[in-house]
Length: 197
Image 1 (cartoon, helix red, strand yellow):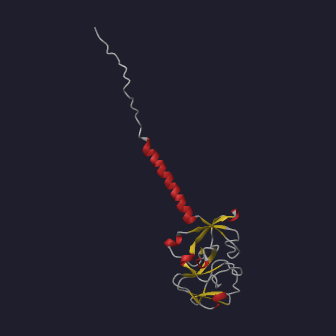
Image 2 (image 1 turned 135 degrees about the vertical axis):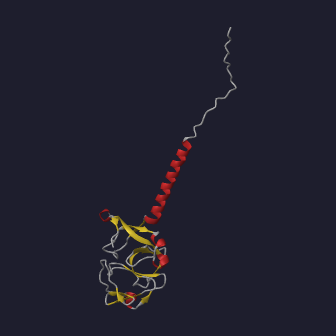
Image 3 (image 1 turned 60 degrees about the vertical axis):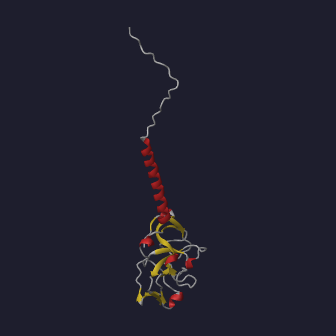
């Protein structure tokens, strides 16, 4: 005679739930990717996507009144500003003033003078490759200006309607006052694109 073992009901036993931990690395991978994308977007916007609205006609025809431009704020951490660069700066470092957009003409250590409507750098006539208007008023540059080791001489391309280094209240622009280099026109739509010289 065979006896079958009775299955006893045991109410004190707890059913163990098995947690599948295989999904944890995948979740961490997704979280890492999302954080990385957000960080890259923040860095891109902070350093390359700073927006400035241009006020006035001083940079016609390259940048017009009301154009919204993007400023590269990291470029001058890796290199020095160059002649012909279009920069954004605060005159005399005054944070209460709007940002100015002008073109670099004179570099640190150079002498700048405007005679008979022509620009002379270290007594040599400057040959400009971009469109400008004639200089009727030389301002303080009618006499030779020698730039310091961290100073730049800037002009607007529309020299008939530009407040720039020719004016004593703006004068030479120090390196510390430069916010960055203009590289892109964001609006209006018909001018959207990389900034040409």
